[in-house]
Length: 218
Picture (cartoon, rainbow, N blue to C red):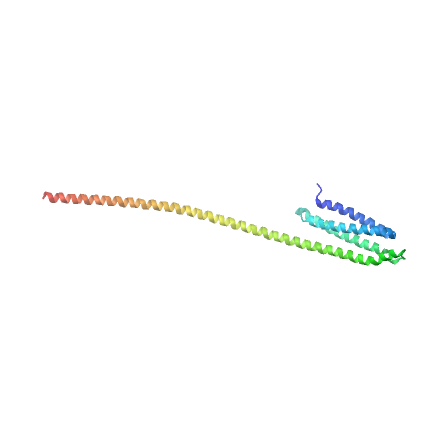
């Protein structure tokens, strides 16, 4: 199954092939044809830049084992597009050293420097955007790692609290058993005291009866 990154690669290859062939035609083309070629090349360059941005986003979703290889490919594609952009700029400027066939062609050459500067600025802007995206991605990864560590710590604390609760529950059960045992001992002690008192009372009554009978006989 073809991944989205590989699909972008195929589209990028088609675009760069078109740009390469059109830049070659631009060098030797007539004025009328040059306008059409310039329009097509600039459109394809913009599409290629957008594809690189999409590929940059897709690299982050690739499996970690394949991510570095895809990132290396992406760097090569950026360098290739930059080279093609410079080739295009040179192709647009190649006729500046010869006689011009018309005023329109002369105007094309005059504005080429502005377009050249704009293309260079776009290329630099793309590189800056890629760097910002990479920095943002690093921040996200670091934040995710911190979040995972916090979750791990919370999990450990939760387990510690759970173990403490279990120990408290066990202590409560031990205290309950101890309380029951203590109550049983108290009840047994009270029973023994009652029995002892009853025995003493009986002994005292018997003693009193014996003394009474002895005095009565006398």
